[in-house]
Image (cartoon, helix red, strand yellow):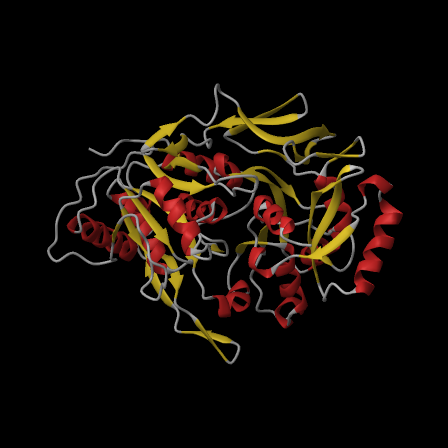
Length: 478
């Protein structure tokens, strides 16, 4: 008999197949032709439930067993969604890896994970050394899937950003993910008739969070090709975006009152959020949200309606936080089981509270994040918190992303170097403008002594840039 849980008495997709069998659960496959998306395919919840069971049976026929790990190296696609759900359905564990990583990086990650199976698209050119290759197949003959719904079973592994070192694999249960979804959706309106665009990768916690919000609410998930992304934004009610994506939408014909825009809620992240941008969005009916989160906590921990304040809001339901000696600590139902290592799960923290290594303070009615404790460096006897300098850089009109790192210096010990992504080429004129801006807005010892363009190979869309990789790249520059 299926375990009766706080959230569902059976698999979420089976629950919605009983409650809303004909409602559209999943939309995918649309292609852009002359600015319009055609060829959309849809699955109802009843059809989805049947298809997931078929693919689950197909995995069993290929030998996959409960608690084994399936690694997926692929960009978002309908196939990856089927794989995740089918993996959960047989009690196995899903871990996604970034397909943009090099073959060496991927094989190093797989070696640490010791995955049992691996799935990747046919067009993949990498050669993988760990795990038996899987195929997404329907069964040769129907069979019963002998696994019942258990929300406390380890379900997913998600690699941390590894911004300051080797990524860790955080293990979450379905209960953790659903608790995360519930807390956010208590404040952010997302109904069963709404649709959320899968705009972030499923190998990252922010992408998985979209998946679990969809399963929690029984709404509609939209999967789109990159070429059709901007048009798809005009056809959904919810999306997770970075500010530049929202800016492009507002600048397009759809954002200027064409009447086709149904987008009403946006969860923003990945960069500083200009109040002018969110005000413009509000004017055409789009509510913008921002917050603070991490892999270990299943994504968002605090959230608020975006405004001119630099704060990240108040703590969401199913989470708790405290500030001790200037550092943010968190706990709650969304906190991961622990980290996966050597086929075992080790606790993520010694006690009840997880130390984030983020520095924060409470101002008024909201949390303000000041930076990472392990990012600070000393220049000429003065403490420099890189995030303080980055915030000032981000107020320059030309800067889209900014990172400040230390470079060794014989006189000062270390000096700040700025690595920036700008609207135009980082020319001498742009650098001069940046220098004037920093002279006007920040104390002299914090001003970068050099400006470098962010290398394209390290840039990402909405996912953290690795400071470790930036530091290694910086060390190679003359």
